[in-house]
Image (cartoon, rainbow, N blue to C red; front, side):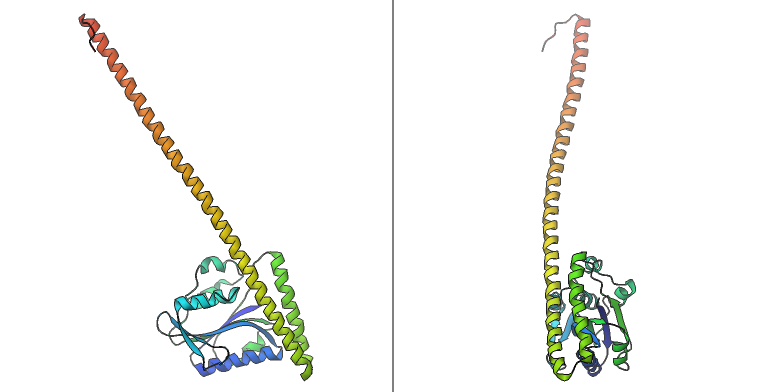
Length: 272
């Protein structure tokens, strides 16, 4: 299963160098880089996102709302962690429960970005933390890492794990391949990565659809219960009103009986 790593920097040059090193590790087959984003905190509620195609020349500025839309495109845990780190996650508390993130990892990344901070947030498969840690020595003082255990149904886990195992097999072949073979293997890895991304996005869509259906049916049940409650209130109200009338009738009847007895005692005729 992949890990989520968050690496912070104060200097842009070091951040970009670190991103290049991570990409080199992926190219060599030491790790598999699935998804990543480099972001920089500007003033309040504004962020810069590095254009992956230019690495250093393509910073674009977004408001927190716009950034939230961008990270929403990352299906799976990466978008969630970016959202937690920048403070732009929507429904993060609920979503965190879907992933096997350690509590201390969540505490470290939650709303942590300070103005000027640059961060690489990436999802990587690594046999050991040594590769990334050694590559970034001298560039960053801290690498926050946690396993991104997707807590979908078992059949979903199996589908994703099958793809990840295929990618890992190809990565191992890449280390031993000739120059000619590497081109084909890299193309195969790229294709498998795309399939994994598409599969997670598909499953995320199904999850959201299922939640929407549950929400709709729950609302319907709530409306039904509220309607029953109103009817019950009316019934209670009617019952209370009727009981009060009955009590008044009894009191009136008692008073009428007393009046009749008084009339009899005085020998008077009863006049309505």
